[in-house]
Picture 1 (cartoon, chains in turn brown, red, orange, green):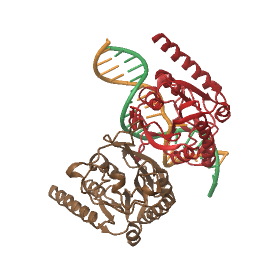
Picture 2: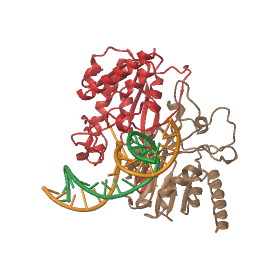
Picture 3: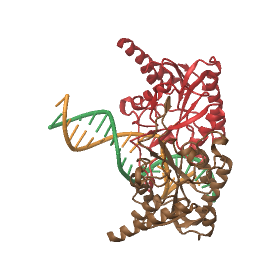
Length: 241
Length: 241
DNA sequence: GTCGGTAGTGAATCTACGA
DNA sequence: CTCGTAGATTCACTACCGA
């Protein structure tokens, strides 16, 4: 686990050392107006009014769309440099930022291979229309990928977000049913990079499935949370062996 | 049912007479190279080699991406003119054209409200990666919509394509489990427009759910198929009453 | 009818090969 | 070298048929 700005830390990493990039950048959506978007932090947008949990806030979520594309393409281009040929890249996004994120992925030099759906069975209904109970995962590769592997993954995953005591981050992803399946695109025994590690769900899934993990997180708080979580996973799997 | 080019026919229709637009334009995807896309017809692209069914072909599926956006925005802008304030618009697309289609929807003047997922349980697997077993439905509205209706629709639908004798068009959508649910966004008793009607699944669903239907189809063959199908539905529901 | 085995299929994607 | 076509691959599900 590194602590620091994703772009800055990525530039320090050696080229062609990583087999997959799996990450969930700050979405910078939610709120159609500039004033909504430029609220100082993410909690006003993602946390519903009466949910008074004490999750720490995260910053870096107040770019407008053009600079979001520019910034994310820089990050993804660095990820491409750091990754080996044939490496996979999975980027989470919501419906609003999907077009911008697909631009950034391709500007960053990745070959867009498809869009995977994460279906959240539990979500707030929307009166008078359709529920927004899916997130999207853009799948790209560093050039052609190994199509000879005996690997067949579904295109739609259904899993609920962690809740209660399990919940450490406001955009935390479920490890079982989602992250542990996603990491399997990575070649066996490879190294997985997450430049926006958050509370470390990608890392937990990676270690569980026998991969190495490199994480970067800007927030000092979450960096500590993730490090501790990964230490626990490593310790428990050391006991297993 | 009208027969003719969508854009030409739409221009003849009176303004503000329709309560929902639900349609599935030709995707113009399929094939990464220009030569793949510009194949004369759709069957060569989408139908696998040994499937020797006798479904008629369709054309108008060979634009490049820029002209696809330009053309589709013109069509959707006309749809906006034809629709009443607060009307809904649902446009099918695949993962490859989703960004372009969302541009066209918004250029056409619609307010993008979300992306609905159609999960297809039956699809070819993909070796070494994720299956492409979802299509996407972009949801837009003509200005603000009626948020007071007692209507709560899911954001993810799971339904299989019609097959066997039920199958009349190579891109036919399932009526049960998908189209009959989608049409419910339309205000009760309203009129639904489909400028790319194909074999008329949208119309069948609309009539079943008690809506009026206006369809446009370029192909003379499919226009006949759809008209006959809708006549059958109308006849059978007349018997019901 | 009901059940169970079988054959067939898919808005795909990649590789190989020939022009 | 580029462009274009033909062939092979694969899993989950469904229509169909026979018992």
